Length: 148
Image (cartoon, rainbow, N blue to C red):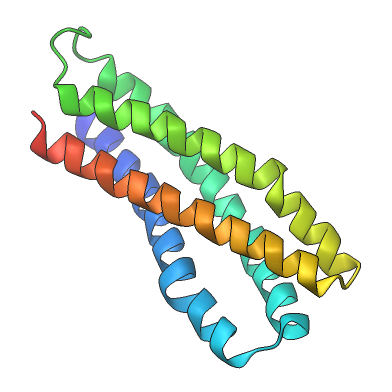
């Protein structure tokens, strides 16, 4: 059972981290270089709408598997890296919640109103916050692997 929980836990992390890496390192730079805001921003809204469903499912999967995995050992016996990963994961989830309920909602409204300057501001804000979350994810992975 532990291996199955671990498999799904890692899958949730891979989908979330991989999507963030793709968005900030490949998709957004390619669109920003060649597309104007009236084309770029609606496309990003469509991409993020689908990706955020993946993130929500990933968060549910990470919580549903991470809690039982962490509970397999009494708190004092669990490696420090596990606790660091759990804490960073909670911060990442809270940061995603902020992205989803604040700049994401504002981006959607701006694109619907064709307010491209406001949409660009919100997209830049989302990109900055996603970069922070991606960094936190790598720190969490490093902590669990290196801090035993």
